[in-house]
Length: 339
Image 1 (tube, rainbow, N blue to C red):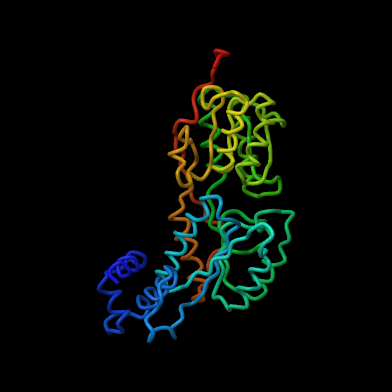
Image 2 (image 1 turned 135 degrees about the vertical axis):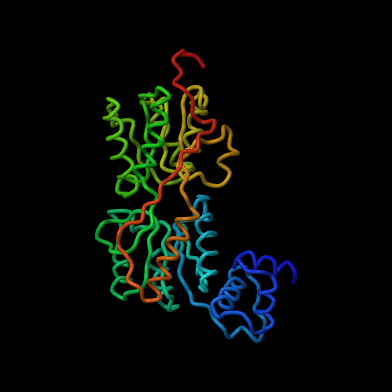
């Protein structure tokens, strides 16, 4: 019992005494706090006391593209906790290969009469994908918030990490180290954040008098294996540094460098994106651009809660600035010609 009280109290941000009062049906606790405690019980997998099982928290869909990339569990933790603090119960929906599709998840959520949906990655960011399910949500006037960039025609509030600033930080770093044959390992060609990053790369390179060779731009799926395969082509094109659109892609690039008989960063520098879990413990520790997960997740939940409450919120994209974290996977250009 004491462990349960401590975990629920930490999740909600209240004292253990407050949690105990809610579980025992005692007065002196606001309805909002009571709802948050009961929601936290659901999120943490604890059974509610029998007399409280009829009280249901409001449901909110949290749709993620995957859990293999550690950035998405990190977002889920922040968003789930913030939802619980506001009295909502998150319903986690994750796409898997051959499993339930994003469109099917949307149908399931509508069937559950959710109060709103928060997407942390999805087909809304790809130009060539089917966007009809999102338009279905819009037609129902269901509160929806998107994490990171979307196609322009979807009129939902968006909370994004600034891709232009992120690329300027990553590319500016390797340029300052003397690299000029810089490879870019990005997501699919129709992926809006990747479009933004590539446009920013061209602009910054031009300001430094550098032309980006088309052979040094590779698009792939967001996985370590895809990153490794694409990095082989970048190495064949003579890249001395590789700027990646995710940390798993960067890990794939490091594996490709090693299998080519080279070393990171002596021969090839590698920069990731996200600063997801354990990137400071890789070999070498990964230089990466950190997304501000905590403030982004909380801002997205605040927007969604305001919409659910009936408030009119801005549809302008809310941009958060990332931070370059320099570790051991980048180094000055090796001009000696030896390893």
